[in-house]
Amino acid sequence: MEVAVSYFPPHTVEELLAAVARLVVGEQETRAQFEAEPTAFRWIFYRGDTDVWIRLLRLPDGSKHDKAGTEIWSSWQTVDSVAQAVIRCFDQVAHSYGESTYHAKWGHPFPRRELEALRAAWRGLASESRGTSPSL
Image (cartoon, rainbow, N blue to C red; front, side, top):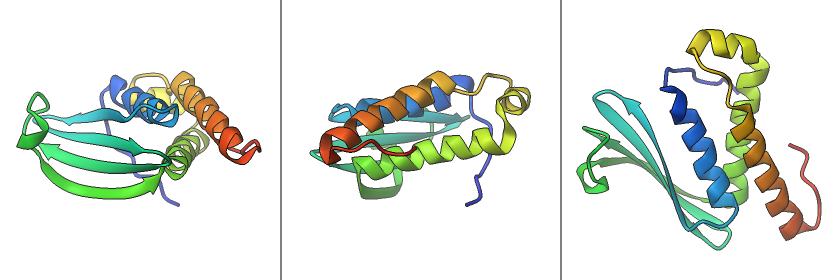
């Protein structure tokens, strides 16, 4: 799998990881926003039991209400699959670039703390639902 690389402000990746972690531990709605000035891309996650509806909106301005945005993608997924996909993506970035190269390339540290918090939350979810410990 090839990982697409782009620039995002430092808080953006942390915000995405934190939103998915909150989703995993049971929050019903979480959000993350990527600023691509002047455009913004807003991820909205709605949890229902073990499934999550994901909406990706493009907004002309990040301060605008959801209704000002255009939905460019949406999907139903399991909470487990969303957490796994995000963890694998960030693990791949860390593996491909290394944390020091990540820092040099994007000007801020790799979000290790937030990634490990998501991984711990996901492992807790997996052990509760399956009675086993996942391998990521």
